[in-house]
Image 1 (cartoon, rainbow, N blue to C red):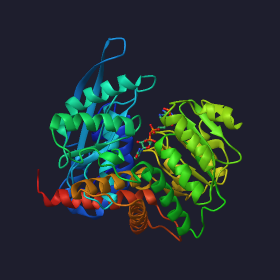
Image 2 (cartoon, helix red, strand yellow):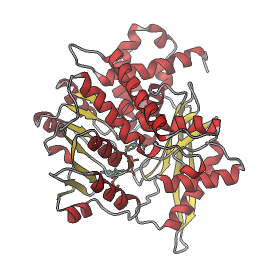
Image 3 (cartoon, rainbow, N blue to C red):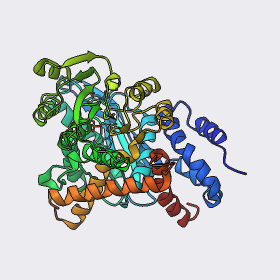
Image 4 (cartoon, protein in one colour):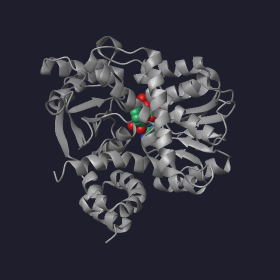
Length: 446
Ligand code: NDP
């Protein structure tokens, strides 16, 4: 009997009650995979979709730490080790008050397909905590990171599970966690990526996700016989991914007119320059300020509590967080003439928004393809650590460009539609699935 989407999703919802983000991520993938599996029955006989939607394991732990006033604080830590069929678990750590099991399961599930798409030998995982870094002092952040790693270190290692950064976890937090790992494990290995350059980090890692999302956009636009030059782009977020996406867009000749944070978005009609982007990086990384301050500094418009999708543009790059672009906003983008969307954030578009993009035949790159550049360079950081050498910036950028180009080609191969239209969602889902699924089949029933 053929696999049925509704039946499959009913079972998944029953087994994972209340995990709406996880349901959403699985449904997006199952939508494309079920017809493919029904044409390739061995995947069904071996229950591959059922197995790939059940994480290998989920580790949940208490994290106790002391704040600056001496109060004892308790948070919850997680690591979802989703699948290691093609390599060690690999995926970031997120510190945000919204973190829960559903969000981390969706991220780890997506990560498995994304990592497979990069062509590098990495499985999928994700972790984090509901710890809210906002407003915490430097010492509190350090104490929390150390307490978090004191438990996590039991479950990770260079050949087992290699975490990295994500929302709320940048160079500072990675350094504190790596320091604690090194101290307890008494070994210097590449167990975390996104490290500082002085202790095993890779050039281009910081920039990779944002740059990669723009390379993907460039390839999609080229595939339609056009270029980025002189086009207008809206970008959301103002963290690592957003600022580097904006930077690369500017280098390639596009005009970036928005950035945002959870307080609202800024609209700079004149466009962001490298200088202005550097100012935002300093604002966010060093001063830990709000994007509103940009409007005050440069005389731009600030739209409190709003997202930038109502601003006219040719390209949209959601680079903040999940479900930050809904169907109504997608329709506004389409009616304003936007013709390409590249997702820097993970699952920023709701399922209904994706359907709007697909129906309008936009060049739409889902996150698992568009933001794979970050983990790809993390994979290259692991390689450099194992070889105990460092590649140059140019070499790494070339490799990143090559990997993003390959991801684009794979999406075209499996997602080609009529004329120059490509269903990048379908292409990414199927291309990412095949490698993992074939490995799972090869191992037998385990
Ligand atoms: P950062 O913490 O550097 O930045 C996150 C940005 O998103 C901030 O501007 C933040 O604003 C904003 N944001 C967070 N939550 C919300 C919200 N609920 N509503 C509106 N804005 C919000 O994270 P990154 O740039 O690293 O990550 C951004 C996205 O990219 C995430 O989805 C992440 O999973 C994904 N990603 C990141 C990779 C990486 O290499 N860093 C790799 C692949 C994917 P505020 O300061 O107000 O919270």
